[in-house]
Amino acid sequence: MPDGSLPPSPPAGAPARPLRDADALAAAGLLPAAGLPALRAVAARYAVSVTPAMAALIDPADPADPIAAQYLPHPAELEATAQEREDPIADAPHTPVKGVTHRYPDRALLKPLLACPVYCRFCFRREQVGPGGGVLDEAELEAALDWFAAHPGVREAILTGGDPLMLSPRRLRHIVARLSAMPHIEIIRLHTRVPVADPARVTAAMAEALDTETALFLLLHANHAREFTQDARAALRRLSRAGVALLGQSVLLRGVNDSPAAMEALLRAMLANRVKPYYLHQLDRAPGTARFEVPIAEGRALLEGLRGRVTGLAWPTYALDLPEGQGKAPIGPDFAERRDGGWQVRGPLGGDHFQPDAPPPA
Ligand SMILES: *Cc1c(COP(=O)(O)O)cnc(C)c1O
Image (cartoon, rainbow, N blue to C red; front, side, top):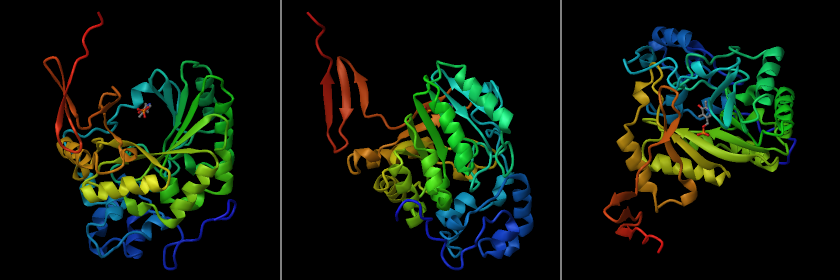
């Protein structure tokens, strides 16, 4: 598809607009009418949106559909467990000005809005995100950008939210231009689900807004191979043509990508679209998300099974964001163990190897 043309419209019969409540989802045949009262209560508590692109992927006849599991409201969302927290990774105490989260010395988050194309049922910011919620007005956005300008130690601006690709190309172009003009900003990073969840938003104007001299990385959030539709592929191609580097991040989710086949297909679908897998996140314990959690031991075994069998390009860092805002820690499988005088290393193709320490310099 040449740059400038819009991606094809959703298939015939698909809804034309996002489905934003339980009744709309039931009317589209995606939710059974029987459970509606309970699901209306869920939707009143946590934002709901299923884009036409994602609705078209759901098989309503499959009760275990991995796309449905990510987006359709579920009665269990109102059952919080004792270990779940409203701000699981403690963003709030690290907010110097509205819209900025600063936790690591060399990088900080900029959250220009809290709207998303779809609302994931496992979102760790589910208490904050929603349509229309938390948009920075002009003055607040300038104040947030001024904060970046005033912090030369911060080399990387990470746009997240919400989903920054929900901004208009004009607004996005302004943010990218202001950050690019700061000599100390070496990297602009943008976390988004838009290229898969609402690929029609990735217009030529959007790609052009991201075309800048500063290194710009787009972190695509995708959790299942099926999300890479023809339209999603075209959107990603448009971004890569604009010089945007593509990285992938996923959440390990029960019933979505917790089988070896589903995880392998996801990582391979990313790579086939020039998206290098970056993080596989352990689920953050946000309220009402317990049904998605996969034990860490299982996540490690899942990755271990891929090592050696699947291209090394597919390997993500399996990470847990520590609850008190202490940062993301890698929790993936270990292949090396300290022994007397050296390291015992397991070979991914089978067989162990003892690597003795080098003799000290004479
Ligand atoms: C996740 C996160 C980052 C980015 O961390 P990386 O490990 O560099 O991907 C930066 N700041 C905050 C506050 C974060 O939560």
